[in-house]
Length: 588
Image 1 (spheres, one colour):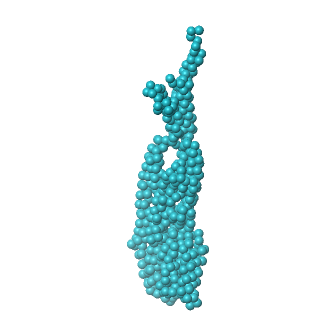
Image 2: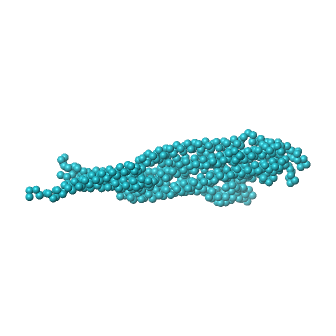
Image 3: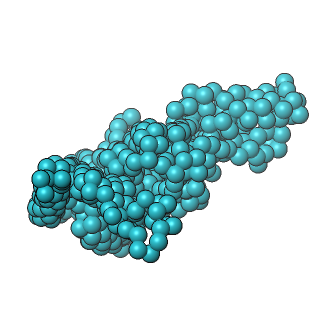
């Protein structure tokens, strides 16, 4: 016969479970709007009859169970949807930040294409001034107009260049900001690993702490591609990796280290100067080539702590040694150039010099080695870096700066090639001379004119043209002091006609068209990723999110369960009352 008091215990377990379910439902409702909260449910199990009797008793023995027991409080999550969400979150944030940067670039160039404004307007003004000049090369007014139109044009190039450099620097700084956020998040995950492991030693699941950790994983997935799994140390912990490199390993975490060669400008310049000085001593005969090479090798070892360089024999003097960085000469024989001046015209070298390099646990994180393949961090890296071979990833900012530089070089070299063949107009201070550059041409490390060193940022008039409008060449023949009408306007006409093929406008329009196509493609991908992300998030929330209507229904169900268990106790109470009061009374 089943124990009457055992039945009370069964009802008691029912009351306990119903009350716990009511509390858990209240907890769900209270956190309905808590970011990252996952709906929880109670896992229960029937308590089997006492083991010995249940297993060994006769067939006729009572096998009634002993009520209900709470097994665990479980989060309602779908791990597949979690993984899908984080993968899409990486892809979407990559696309969004890439699109934002390209949209900003397009805004800069669109202003340059407006009629009468920016580079387009200033090119047109320069062309109009050359037309007037070709009609009257002796007019000071027309010469001044040419000079001022050219100044305005170069200034427009410089303004756009500076804005693009600012965007480049902003994107580069965002790499550092992202790395700092990733480091902070990794530290928080490691701390939560410890807290969760300590709590779950009791046998219960630390659901609310796990919510915090999952929210941090969602946050990390915005910035960079991550993989994660339960730790071998303790299954309550997780390990997180970036590109196969440990970010979080159980209770410990690694920080992303940030370095930039630009932080070591003084050290780099000091070393390259020493190498140039050693070359000078070898050239002067005060130092042997062998001893000089030994000293230079030691200096190169120091230099490679900051940048990767190549040491080669000088083509003119084989006993001297040149140093190049990304194809840019830092030392040529006994001459050296400061690192910043050397890399400025070369987007590949400037990218390598200025970029923020990331290292995790001794491994370089980069696009090149495939350790960073998605997320916001990837978009910033992609927008600022070059692969070292003159190619940029996804036509980022260096690509468009390089195209703008090419346009400035095209204008400068085309005009100079014509202008240097003409003769200036004679003045009291100076006769008619030829070979004058219209635009300034920077010198390379050897002191030679080098058009490749022209950028949109340093594009300017030559000193001769800036100082005197009479130095603008218009004639193909020398003009004599005695007869200032002895010249002609053939050079002025050639300068004017250099615009006739539309190559300047074509180069600018091609650049903007490429940018527009890239932006359109990026926007399309971004919209698609956003739609997929929203869809997955909706599915995710339909499972893990708190539905107030559903929880309100559960309140009624658990309340009724509690009431029913109470009635069982009341019924048993009445039965026991009769049993205790009336036993032995009959027959008295």
